[in-house]
Image 1 (tube, rainbow, N blue to C red):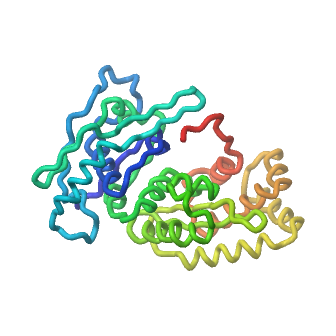
Image 2: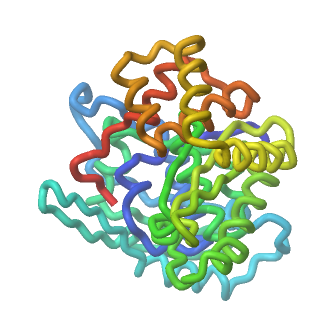
Image 3: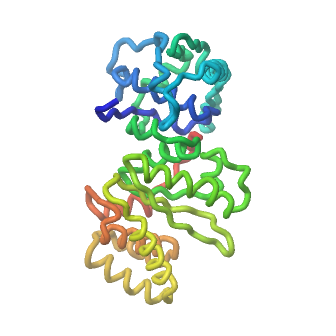
Amino acid sequence: MGELVHIQEPLRLLLSRNNFDLLERRVYWLILRHIKQLQILRPTEVETLPSEFPAFKIPITDLQLPNSSSEVNYSTYKRVAQRLTSRQLYLDSPAQHEFTSVVVFPMARYSKGVLTVEVNKHLVPYMIDLSKGYTKLQLQAALSLNSQYAQNLYTRLCKFLDIGIWRVSVTDLKDILDAQQYVRWSNFKQTVLARAMEEINQKTDIEVFVTEKREGRFITTLIFTIKRQSRKDNKAFDAFNEEMDMVYAQPTEELQSKASQVLLQHYRFTSAQIREIISNENLLQEFIRLDVLIQKGFIDVKTNPTRYIAGILFKKPKAAATK
């Protein structure tokens, strides 16, 4: 895999629930590579869509984890084939009162260094239809990850790469990473989050930094800043977080005054939007943070900075999101 290859994961599948383990997710990603040419953005413009996929043949050499022995372990891949046929994917659409549970791989066979896998025909429309959105992943980067937590976190971070910011509650993140057993924040941070972020920053095409938001004594929200890999800048971002802590410690009136000047001089928000930012403490702090991130180059805004920040501050929650 010398040439960089990107795969496209439809959002319906990314946001669904599944119980893939480390190797099984690699199988899933490699299948997405095989069907990339079949994926479409506008299904209504295509007269005939495939009703099922042929069986996919995946060499075990493509599945082996980085730094693992080149010797194929028959018992390992026998277990992989056995487990694949029990894996399910759950598609939940509360707004439509619909829930679908699908066995993803009804057949898996291992023979002579090749894993042959069939995909459930009921998943074909979900896998080829990109019209409801998709996330692009660099395949080599995804396959380099050695932990399930890093795999799951990487796919979610890539979803927000163009925006550069992902705000998520600690509870939701534990749910996404399937790490609900880590009740204490300190255990979750040290055992799951820090290790996953370190692996992503070291091995993939993106780098990510996180800011913790506290309510009272508890860390309740995390704000991830995501950018394409360029240089290792963790120390600079640590310094940024320390700087922001000092900024937020200033009196509210002083923050409002400084933010008002920046809003009027450098941005084109409406009067109503400016009033809302200044009067809402959460929006005020988030605006200050985003402005500093842009000025320091942590976020590369390719569009209008006002539109970019407004899209984050005033983004309306969906009436019913698919989990």
